[in-house]
Structures are given as structure tokens and as C-alpha cells.
Image (cartoon, rainbow, N blue to C red; front, side):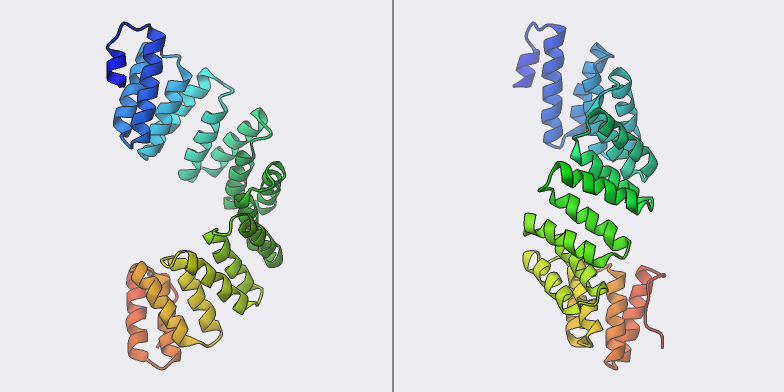
Length: 292
């Protein structure tokens, strides 16, 4: 369809619009190279077309060429200093490169342009948490929730920051709110389970992990965490069962091997305990394993 349109006698502006639309279609279909070719054609025709640089940045990011993606976003922003989406996506890309402070600067610029953009507060909160600024993160998540009261991810992420501050009951409250908004929120069940265990409610933790596993029986993290809780109760058989299921789903799960080794040792099965310890250390030399 787009090819036929481009064969006609088109004005430069109409040709650019068709190329942008075809590039977006290629990108949505997963053909990022062809998408980039179309955006490059637009840029050659009009080097000041900010959207073409922005779209090229998106395609490059999807190709995982993050450095070149940032270069494209830079150009889009230089042409349009209030290009909110370019700042936001450049922030996302910087975050993927672990440039948390660069990402924070971009999200802050988004918020300056549009103080109602709740996703920018949430994303800046993630970066602030990753830099250790837990209070700043909580403030950002709280603002995101104020702007969008049904924002389950905002509650979930604030729960993570509260858990990091050892405010386990505050974290549980946030995870519970996230689950009320999204009853299939796997990581909210898993993380509420972790917070419940840390607060001493091991049975409640097991209930949460079990619910996560009901939703997704291949959720290895929940199986592993439930195994830890069973082991804490002295239920080594169920712990071993859960560690084994987690390993079947993720054969490189070093911590699951290590903890299963502890459970085998506590049951007196030293041979299996030693084998799990050996396998765990092969996968991760820093993982905790039983000693003999």
C-alpha cells in the first residue's frame, strides 16, 4: 500500500508523511532496519524534521542500539526543546544503560514541561530508588499516585521503596492496594509475600506466593520464595519440592540449588546436598551454599 502511494506525484511533505507512516508500520511489525531506512529517507529530505529523529531513536532502541538511539533523541530535542516524548524515551534509554542521573534529568525535564505526566514521576522514582534516594523515590511514587489514583504500578513501586526502608507494613499496604487494582499482579503478590515474611508472617507469605503461582505456575521466583518460607517453618520436603520446580523452570537458578542443598543437609541427605552446593557454585561462585 505504502509503496504504491510513494510512486505517485507527491509533494515533499506528503512523501515524508507516507515514509513516516510506513516506518512506523515496519517498526510495529518488528522490521526495525526497514523502519530506520524510511526515517533516514525523511531526514535526508528534511534534516530539521524532529519527529523523524525521534522515530528513528525508537527503532534503534528496539534494536538495542541504545547509544545511537540517544544520539537520535538528542537531535530531536535540539530541534524541538519541548519535545516531551523525546525526553521521556531518552530517559528510558539512559536508564537501560544504568545512567540513572542522566535519566533523572530527562524525567525532570518531562515533569517541567508537563507536571501532570504521572509516568515520568514513576520512572524518576525508579531511578531515585536505584541511586539509593529512597525518600525521593517515595515522594515521586506518591505524586504519580496523586495524579492517577488507580495506578497499580505506582503503588507497587512505592511498596518496593518502603520495603527497602524496612517499612514492611507500609510496603504490604501498598502491595495490597496494587493487587486490589490489578488482581493478577504477579510481582505484587510475590513482593507482598517477601514483605510478609520479613515482618514475621510466614504463613501469609506462603499464601501470597501460592496465589502468584496459581496465576502463573511457571513463576520461578515465587516458587523459590515459597520454598524459603517452607524451609523457615521446618517443612523441608515442601521446600525441596518448590526449589526443584523452580530449577526445572530455570536450570541456571543458582540460589535455588544452594537453598535446596541446605534443605537436603537439614534432612540428612548429605550426598544430594553436596551435589546441589557444587552446582550452585558452578553457576555463581558467590551464592550461599551449605558447608560440610
